[in-house]
Image (cartoon, rainbow, N blue to C red; front, side, top):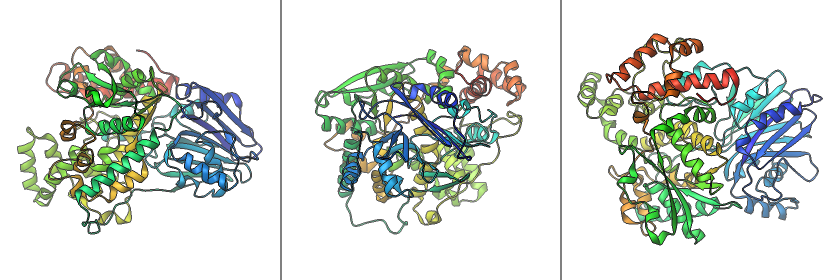
Length: 624
């Protein structure tokens, strides 16, 4: 695990300024405090900061092949490196380290065009081929590890974080207003954009090559599902559950490969509990768990549920911490590491549990990805319940929406969304940035407009509606939001967060499970509940999904935290030029008077102001 950066020049005789590359890596020190490494050659400079997890003694990067013609830097973990290493050694390749990263250079030697497809893990990597003068960048299948790049007059500049690109000095920090529109529409920036114009992000499951001044990208992997009529109906629910348990157990076993201490993030739900139980079964020793509670009882599930670490037979060492109102003061630091504004507040919660975990371990496993792989979110039930109404006449849907607006606000939005599954319906189902319509004129350039469509696979139309929703969940919310704040805020404290449910063979298997086995009636993740019988206590197997949340309303109740109020002052609003100052003032007055709840919207505006201060003006984290 580390932070990587580099500069590849179109001119093969041009060298890389060492001090410039060091600035790029130093600004990501938090990603790798254990060591640093560089490679310089004609037309290329590679740098990294290392967090030592596997082969702590000899695994420093960059790592080269036997003759030094192929050099790699990698952020992440290759979980099947043991098996790959054995095969490569049998083929005659010689290894100098015990690192998982070293398999990449030898795989590249064997097949430069398809080496990445053999990797099982989470990664963002760069391979320099000196003979071909070719740079290859690649990102894992689910986008767990980030990778930014910019095309400049000199060539390609890349890095694990946006701030590394800006630290190169080759790109000016101008806000991409389309990205700002994304944030206020969805709650996250959609690839390939970043918050800065001219800086792109590699998509999940994508490779980029830079050779002879030409850039080319290709999608090396994409999630697919059987046609709606092609699911295997001969298998019983028990058979599906048994295979799911076997696949998940194997994934957890691979994710436990580490030379550093390992723990687990534990909630009251079945996903993280399943991971924790399977980890303990593999390790057969006491395992530290880390759980976040809230002083606000409305979002604190710990008050009402017994967690797995309270069952003595599981040998889990429970660690509890509490998120309180004063923790909203972490907003600037959270924006600095997330590199974009947010309105949900989960980023701050993540930072708290990451900081506590990093005091004891270097690696944590968590349950993210299960809800996407098995359709566990509330919107799967909502779409199943409301999809028939999509065929009603518009006038009838409007009437139903008006009736439901008070009791079930989300349903009123869904009823008015397009009937066909796509980006617009997915946004209506999953919720936008603020769960409220934006006031007219808030953004000065009218950046918030319609919802852009995304290219969908040719076979998408033939999939079951449940599978279509899963695909959009993976391609949008998971890769653009869930794993991004997981990575950014764990790495803020030099902590590696691993996600066993996002092992791609496991996800590919889950895609073959029929939708009616995943969602039985309105019971979500029914197949996982069945799979965990005998592994988890019955109360946890039966427990309904409760979404990860944060006490944003509590944080934003009057008087507003200083960090928010200062960011929303009229002078600062006018200075940045993104928002109409009178509109923001009106939102503030209504919120403080209790006329309306604008908690998330105000947090999002304040975060945008902080982003501008940190990234556009000074490129450093600020305290307010």
